[in-house]
Length: 445
Image (cartoon, rainbow, N blue to C red; front, side, top):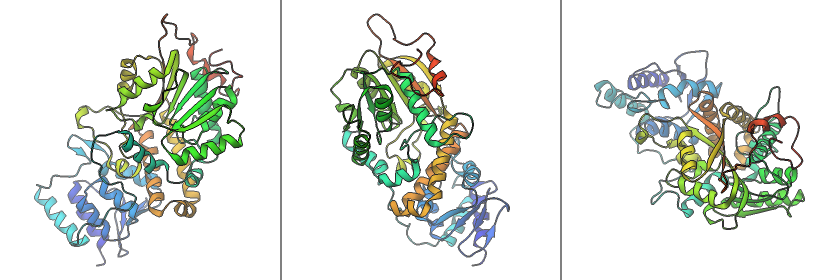
């Protein structure tokens, strides 16, 4: 067979009803499709069987993670071109795949069977999470989901995230700002929005590897309790904190937010954690955080958001993200998040969209991963490294194209007299971003 690429292209176009947007190189060395751009390399006919058994995104993801397909050239350009035939949602669901009732599509499917063979479907790659049964977002199920994503290995995350060890959107300024500078600016922005003052108590929900806790304790003199469900994160954070001489100001716990009982706190930071909570638990999450704050206490909720659907009941969790990246993770529209915070008793005082900042951050993480690719595979597995490369590159494009966003929501637990405790001109915190952290004076002063 010396024409596999030509046949693949023709069959794909028949099934999709549109020209295939990238050049294909097949396992027999043949090529077909538009020249001059990225090339989709189909290394094994097994990839065709994966797509036949799981058409669309999940089949492609399995082929990618297993190494059955690859991209030669600009990965971002390839994903951007393929998004129109795989990830874009139309009125009939994901992608413009034509109905199997169409005689031409049935004929194309038979042709694909001829190319891929009639053997049973290949097993999913080892990195895939099996389907889960039972209720969503129980404590046990959440612990398992968090372990899948965050217990990949601290050395692997050091390679990807760099010295800052911050796994959330950085805050970029003009010029050639480094990733570490941008992450430091984000941590300081959170501290300023919360108006942290020396001696106050801060709860950092989803504390990761301890970067936010260390910044707040070192630069603002607060006492921090950080909680995470990842034992590897907690061990790493405790080591960093001890080396920095901050053990008297910071406590790191392996603990669910639903089990925290030692309030009240003056402020709570939740940075990149709420995406794991899920819609069925979000009101409980917001109410629990409100209960942990003193009257007048502040919450900074930093959270990724999706665009609202015309029919919200049609929303489905991304199968690649659910099976390989964030099991049980769920994005909500910003408006829904704000409403739930308000329903839980918070007064929402400020909302800032920093969508473009996350695209820049993700591109830096992908560059870090690609720069030390062999070591990344050795620290995790070839499949896991491929998962992270695809997930971060595709996410960068999603932020750039406004398919998803990220927002910082500042909310206050009302005090009996109605005072918020915030300055009249709240956003004066941005004036300090280039001045370095305040010496305990808080935001807006």
